[in-house]
Length: 405
Ligand code: C5P
Image (cartoon, rainbow, N blue to C red; front, side, top):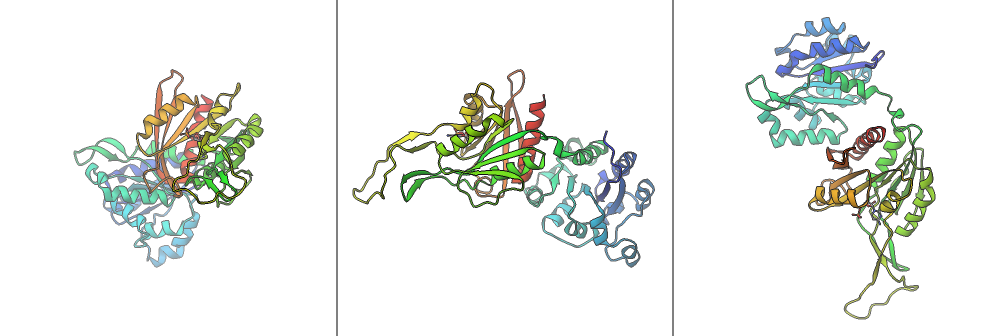
């Protein structure tokens, strides 16, 4: 288990029966050397006392936004800046709603607005409450705001119900905190990652082309995430309006054939190839050398197939770990499975582009990952809706695990 020495962890506790498990979490964090401070909502104090948490954390417990003595000792802004990580556990439905709407109505909600620390949220509540669309919508918002939602466990609940809504056990929460501080840069250190992104443009004549709605945001998020995980990243991109991520080598291309060439020129050095571009499947057979004039009511354009970059990379004699994308409007998982098998790639990320809230041009995404395990069995993992950088990081973390197995 990793040391948490010199890590400053703030635990926010709200009113739920699972609060009785928090002193145990605090102790286990202290065992690993963390400096732990607790913030309690008023509801939390109905379940456990500040004195308990003070005893186990060895620090004063904070619960009042407007208490002059507490503010003089360590003001709420100071506390928000103090934390290296904040975990809200248990997070009641009320706290989720407060955070989703930017309230600053008590110490905990104000701290969350005032912090730049990563925030982990462990919702815990009755299964019926957890299933409410309003609660789920608040959780979605928190993900979009960059917080990490910890999925509640299933099982027997204090109220007698059985279902999803239990707070994960203290050791599981401690492990999530430890995982956060794992030096991420090591995960893809020494690896070279080649990524395609954006649309391609297929010329019809000097002024017209065929293309699609890809914004390139997902491919750019993958490039940023791979660089943050320690990889050397080359990004081959079609025409997009996006800034190049820090320390990423960018190669601009226009057509599918240009993209194919750029990829093949760099594939020898790649340990990982990610085909995220929305490459045009076809291009006009003939490109007119001057602007085509309007004449008949109908016009026929003969198209020929473009090279399949992803399939070409995967079928190289010594291919890199190859990851593809499947943007579909229906039967998403079935089509993705077919692509995984036909293109003989190692991992495919499938998303539903008919959902206008995610995917093309959006800053958020959600996807299913599909791959075959060593026994050839199809495996799946769903990545819940989150901003594209977070989704990209999760995808790469998963790919790194598959590569190392
Ligand atoms: O075959 P389809 O276009 O549905 O597959 C999508 C996946 O294949 C994406 O990862 C995309 O980047 C890649 N692709 C490619 N070259 C093409 C067409 C798709 O690399 N010509």
